[in-house]
Image (cartoon, rainbow, N blue to C red; front, top):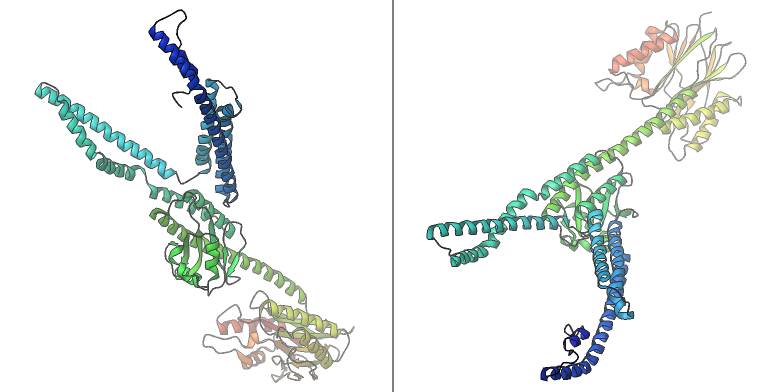
Length: 627
């Protein structure tokens, strides 16, 4: 076909010049006539062959592009999909000038000059190869960096060795010629043969030396870790951490996909994200595969732990997502989570340097994950402190701005919670127009926000019932019924003393609902405890309560307190106790309520050795003045 590709040229060679005769000319004319008949089927066969071959090439182009498009649809990794799209567009663009230059002229008889055919061929090759080069340079297509560097190194080593051989042969020939006085070609040939035999071993040694000098994968990996470390210390969000590690692994190792599993302290479960942007999957902590991963110390190929797949839902998830490598995240002996990697998009294996990089990366992720967890805990703590401070402000606003005032008496109150908010409270409620008022001191079980909420409900219920002008015992009974219903699910209760003081008669009617006994300290130093009442508030519904009246003589005082005062303990685990309270009041009964309050708080602090109480402390002092 090569010989008969241009039949006109062959016939022209056999054409006889007009007017010439002779035996040779006769033979040429006869041969040309016969050849014309032979060239007819050959020409037809050649034309058919070109059209058929053009049709085969066209079919190949269509099938090739079709398979590439179908393969693109199966690519899930966004980065790899972009790489393939660039190459596919380049190949499709290259096929256009190729079809115009080589396929269409044979199929439809399109006439194109040889110069245009050459230009179109160059354009097709430039577009096809250029798209692959652009995908490699711009989108890091394939794991090609090491291949390129090794090729350059091999070229350098080969060039150095060949140059050394040529230099050695030239110098040796010059020396032999100067010594022997003539050239020795056979000796040169023998030297070249020996050099060729030793070329590959020597070249390999030089190649290894240059690789160690110029190809420093470990140094490259150190740069990756250093860059990642500088970025990871500023990340305090789990999703951002995953995104950074995913981008690093895809760029540096050309990993097709990554998955992340992390232990969530709030939900007390391992959460697995099979790929970037995927929904979380909650894992059972007793999963056999999770237990196997917890025993790993280094990045491990999945097929080495595949034997743990029996009864493991995690194993099914890993297999469905094509996991090839598992990187454990261990904080000492505790598994914080793990990272999963699919195969490289280039198809290359994970090298020893890759495993080393992943091990270092795992340590970085453990530190970063711990930072994220601590940061979240600090945010929760900060938010809780803000809420507690707000609750404290609200609780303080519920306390009276100032105690009642009158010429017949003086009142002082003090409240100090052991936490930001507490369960102690006191209140004064006006009962009549003659200056009478109700006094309550209460202690809700527990501490913190739940106790403060119940204290607020208790205060609201008491104020509501006092407004109904009931008897003291009835008021406490109604409050008990309300709190019993509100605290049925929380199992909280409260102790309280409620009483109403009449300044005109100096009488105080009270009911004690399981509270510390208030002390009535007489001016002569005698005392009694206010015990009459009933059980605690909120524990039992429809509980009856009793009330009693006591009369305050001039300079008599009533001392109300919560257990934060009496149960304050010293370093020897000894309580301050009621006896010390009574003894203190007896020795300081001549002082004003303000002075008594300040002195007993100081005495308790000196006794316990601490300035901040371990329990909520509330004090209310009512003293009758001299006439």
